[in-house]
Image 1 (spheres, rainbow, N blue to C red):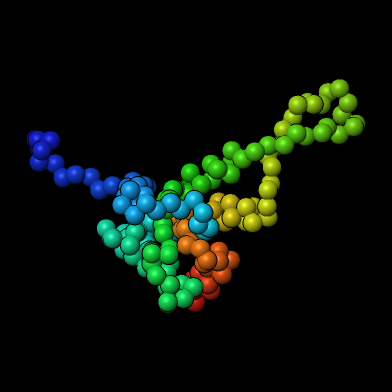
Image 2: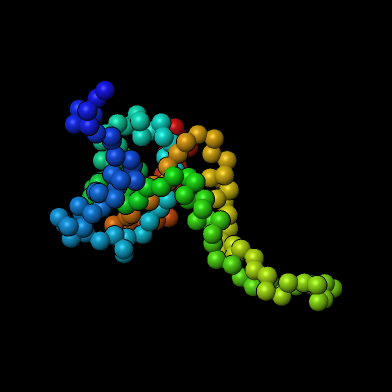
Length: 164
């Protein structure tokens, strides 16, 4: 049997890698991404595997080139990673709003009923697209340094993906 000391250490998950990176940035460079606008991007597991151990830096460089080749990778940061299932749970556990029963139901209606809230059409589209993912994927939160514009970045990323 292999002794504990002889075992190869397991590679950290993408979630663990990003958490460690963001902690390091906060300590070493006193960076905080709270004021940076964010974009959520689904990335297939195959892409992580293809990029290898340096996937985090490779994604930052790829994302920096999307809106304009002049943007520095320092202005585009991957700040969170989660599974598609974790992202879908955010939708399933969204806020609820009171529901007024139909007048015809009278006393039989539940007057304390709550319905899930749909906050935006964009949210519905996003979660609808996630529901049809057949391959294993991760959701990557990309933070953009001000003054980079989220809409411009998302549009440039969409155009780039359509070209491929």
